[in-house]
Amino acid sequence: MSVYRVVGGNRLQGEIKVEGSKNAVLPILAATVLNKGESIIENVPELNDVITMLRILESLGCRVEYKDQSVWVDASNITSSEMPANLVKQMRSSIILLGSLLGRTGRVVSTYPGGCAIGVRPIDLHLKGLRRLGAKIDMQGQIVCEGETLKGTEIQLDYPSVGATENIMLAAVLAKGTTIIRNAAKEPEIVDLQDFLNSMGAKVYGSGNHIIRIEGVGKLHSTRYSVIPDRIAAGTYMAAAAVTGGTVLLKDVVVEHLHPLIDKFKESGCEIETNCTRLRISAPKQIKAIELVRTLPYPGFPTDAQPQMMAAMCTAQGTSIFVENIFENRYRHVDELTKMGADIKVDGRIAVVKGVRRLNGTTVLAKDLRGGAALVLAGMVAEGTTVIEGVEHIDRGYEELGNKLKSLGADITVI
Image (cartoon, rainbow, N blue to C red; front, side, top):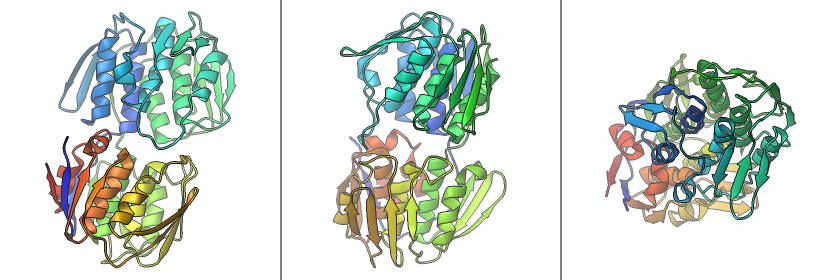
């Protein structure tokens, strides 16, 4: 297993291209199953989760090629509707194949998905939505969904779940009639999935709002599509600049997706300049504490950026309060940050972070994807050397995070 060795004290400076979105590309890759032709997906980041998804597609009978951030998928000959348990358990997003496989083959068999242990992430809303479309679901030891003829219907989600919204969209594309999803998730990744589906000939409308309408079609056609930039990766690079007092230019971003983050970094004293696809962040020598960071579904502050923001606040001037409303176990990085000298108190979903004069390098463990990124940021501002174990979690969601930060001046070695 690899580890990161980070020597703190360097101020980040330079420019960096933001990779394609992990949370957008995985459901888009799942959606290629619906297409009996070819799909070419561009701006695909080289991530462990992407490789796992491609291996699952190959196990189903798809032909796959991945080169130079471009993926070619030929799903014309699906030979299996059973997903390999060893691959499904490696990532949460494998669950999104339920909707696309059910829509394409009328049957899907899967074990329960894996991924980061950041809290209870039930799939009841996914299954409830598929049942409303006409699927019969057996959950005796594994998930077996059957539905030769899915029919459009109206579905009211109890919570705007991103995954449930995506699964229902995918299953409804080839269903008979019209499906309406109410209280749908509004995340940019939902809009990207809609745009990809429509590029294949689907009829999906309204994503980005709380009501999505899907008119079922008889077939889809080949397509070429480019994935949106990763707003969480962009937020991580912004936090890296902020915590080190640096100045960084981010290229290939969608600024509109970053406003929940931009607002908080401005509050911390950073100067931010933007145009449509670029963002420059300039941080003072010491940033100020942020009064309140409350995670919420989009367009609120993203839970996936909370650990990185917390790392930045560990050495800020003043006290910051975090309220985690999405995942109840999203503070797994706190114990590791306190090993480095951070002053953090947690009570349920509330964390109080008092900025300290310095952090100290030590050996810490990345227990999940975003928490691992937070430890890298903390290591860059700590005195001495920080060794971060569990890097495989980080590699699931960032494309060469260590090397990209190194290109900005960070002292990071992958061992």
